Structure formats: C-alpha cells, structure tokens
Length: 305
Image (tube, rainbow, N blue to C red; front, side, top):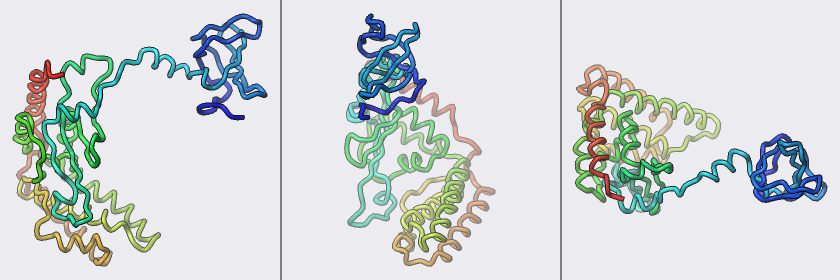
C-alpha cells in the first residue's frame, strides 16, 4: 500500500480535508471529524465519522485533528532572516578565531543579537527566539532570549559579549556590551565546571571504547576551564587563550597523552574550587538591571517594524 504522508493507525482522530461520499450515498462535508477504522484494499483509509456514518479518503485528503485546527487559525510567521538582516544590534565572531586557536582551515562562526520590533509581540505569531542564518555559520538570538541565557552564565552567550572580533554594533549593541559585566556571577562555576565534568564522562567512555576521544572537543573543554579560572579569579572573562595556544593545539592534534590531559583537567578543577572561595564575582547576576534595560529597549523599538 502506498499513501501520501505517515500512515495512520486505527483510532487516530482525523478531519476530512475535502467532501467525501459516505457509505449511505450522502455527502460527508469538508471538516467532518472521525476516527480511522481501517484501510481499504485500494489503499484508502476507512473513517468512522462522529455521527456514525462511514467514509473513505486518501491520506492527502485527511488531516490529524489537532493539525487541522492549527492550520485553520495559523497566521504568517515573522521572517527570521529579515529580523537578523534588519534588526541585529550586535554580532561577533566566536569559536577558534576568537579563541586564538584558528588555523587556515578554521571556519568563521558568527553569533548575533537582534531586537524584534515591539509590535511583533502583539501578534498571534511571535518573533522567533533564535534564527539560524541567513548567512552560513551565522546564528542569532532575539535580545530577550539572549539575556535569559546569558544571565544563567551560559558560556556560549557570555563569549559572544566578550569576543574581541566584533563585526556589527549599533548604539543598542553598545549598551548591551556595556552591560556585559552585569551578566557575570558565581553561576559560572556551575555552568563551566559542570558542563566539562559531564562531557568528560562521555569522552572517557569514548576513550575506553575506541582508544581515543574526540580531541578537538577535549581541547575546547580544557579551554573552558581556563576561561572559568580567570573569570572566577579576576572577575573578567578572557576569550583568547593567549599563552596556552600551543599546548591546546597539541591536545587537539592528539599529541598529548590522555593521562596528561586528565592531570591538567583535574588540576584546573581544583583551581576553580579555590578561585570560587575567593572570587570577587557576586553570587547571582544583576537581573534587575538587565530587565530594566530590556524594558527600555522594548519601549524604544516601538515603530521599528
């Protein structure tokens, strides 16, 4: 049997997309609801309608009940690519090029922040919280989502704000960068150290199974610990690896024994614990200040559609 779309099991609630003749010679109207009761020899679905009548239909003549309702009230979704092109306030290169770990083969990964026009939130179709594209290796967050994640000390978001390679910055972007220290807090200990610990458990399993982990991933995990150490010790996030470049690239190339990498990692975890006890960072970020700024951005973005 060949039908269009995923096959529907018996009992599935469906809606007729077109009028169909019922078993008594009458007409079951478009929008009639029922349940799949079987499949006919010629590949059509038998449907028992809610009023007790029977009808048959091809797969493309049926919709799942919830999908039919969603389609009926759907409104056009905002153009995410347009949001990024027209409303980006800040963008920077991240990844190996920002970390000082790039080679001739490295990609140029760009991350940005856009401010959706305030009126867009008044629609049933809300602006996207993030957009992949429109250019290759470009990913952006809507400013509210960006602030939420950065306040939780997500390393990927914090590194965007502290990248030395800024490619776009509007006056609002300058304000956001001016707030970057406000996002920093002791939550970084959990996000950086906790993430590395969870990932190394997986890498150790890879090492036992395959004899080698994914060395590039190992390198970036060590880099995260180095960044976290400086952050907790000095209260500032340094993205570029500086003097650690050669040793980290050796890890990436698999030229450092696993046992040595493990000693380095464990030593860094101990240093993080010590740095946390003496850190100048506040226990939590200044959420109120970020929220006040976001509210002001929304007010100033009225009429920017």
